[in-house]
Amino acid sequence: MKQKRYYSSQKLYRNSDGSLQTSSFHDYILVDFAVIDTPKFKRKFCHRFRMSYKSFQKHLEELVKECPLFSSCSSTTLNAAGRPPVPLELLLLGTLQYLGRGWMLNNLKETTCISKETHHRFLHVYIYCGSTFLYDKYVLLPESLEQINDNSHKIFIAGLAGAIGSQDATHM
Image (tube, rainbow, N blue to C red):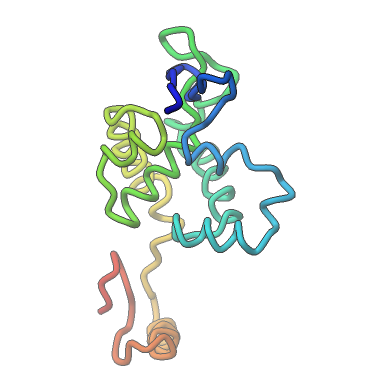
């Protein structure tokens, strides 16, 4: 059996033969750009995180740009212990799993090699930023009968006849 040594500042495992092994989510942020364009990677990423990799990158950039709480997160800064901070990408992937697939914090800890408390704090900051800074950009209420009819038609095409809108996965 291979013996693993955990390096918390790097989030890597060193096997007994000296080779490095990352947690499974690290594979998504350390991915070779040639792999991103393959149909297999796109399908796998979309299945796991409920969004395309391109949408994930866009959302990550938007978080850093729009939310002042994330703008200080940088791979060039150091945390209070003098080590590089936890990659924002991993925390966001963990949050997507937590919200989209009902994962527990223990699952996130085992998958990303990041503590439950760090995931828990990030989740609260993420929800706060989404409900304040990003809310007005993405939550739009219809202002006219024409917009209500347009929404109703799109939702009818999706198979939900009679609904005029959708919020928090509740169709009204």
